[in-house]
Amino acid sequence: MDYRTILVAVSGGSASVGAVELACRLAHRFASHLEAFHVRVDARELAFVPADGFSAPLAGNVIELAIQDAAENAARARAIVDAAAMRHALPIREAPPPIGMSPALLRQPTLAWHEETGYAAARVAGRARLFDLLVLGRSGRVADEPYGDAVEEALLGSGRPVLLAPVEPPKLVGDSIALAWNDSPEAARVLAGAMPLLLKAKTVHLLSVGDTGAPALAAHLAWYGIRAEAHDVYPVGGVGAGELVLSAARDVGADMLVMGGYGHAPWREVMFGGATREVIGTSLLPVLLSH
Image (cartoon, rainbow, N blue to C red; front, side, top):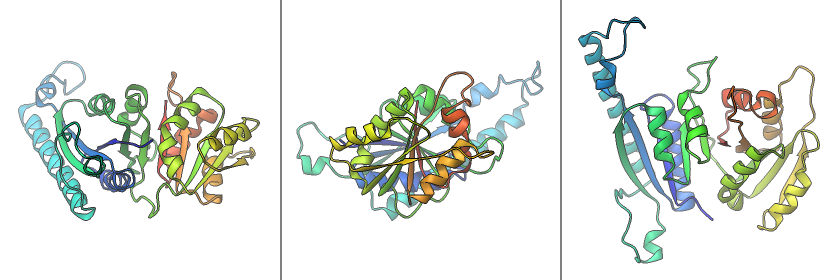
């Protein structure tokens, strides 16, 4: 049970370096094929965007500046990927190997670059459906909105587990995993998506708020040879559930947090009454989410 293919979205912005670095490490860990995916702004769509929100279209020079900015972002994104490929010694493979080739040759980490034009959030979510795991960067540039449209779109529209990478991933990733468990369908889905990571982890910690069946989950994981330790996370007045979960993850020495995220309107009303939003906004750990 592995992530045979991994997709990492590379915007060229501040969050891209951490996302690519984490994705490359996972490609080696699982001998995966990694695709670095960049989406450029569509200049044809910009031409029909009202500058004032009502009627007047954007001026030609504004569109030209946007096209230039898109080209610069693409160049930065490609440079980030090329540097990571060299740093991690990942060979480039643009197409899958022939069917029937030696398994030893097939099970090698490889890297490819793919670029499209359009609305990035939708394109990333659509492309991710063809991969086992999606890696997104998490930038701290917007304090009030720590995630962008890409995170929400990916959770709701990709059907795949989404791993959010901090700007600087920890040196060890996936050795000690904390799984936040609330006995919900969302938590069950992220559990399924996290199984490749859990199987390779040295330690697994189950964090539960209240009576959520963590001991039963530990027994379930034992069938896979996974030894998991259950921890109760007790409510504290004035402290959000997300911060409680993060604190518990730090206390057990986790290098990654796994948790489910609700996708019902409003999307921000999520697991543990908003814990997912708190975690996305403040976690310095990689966070695996699934809807």
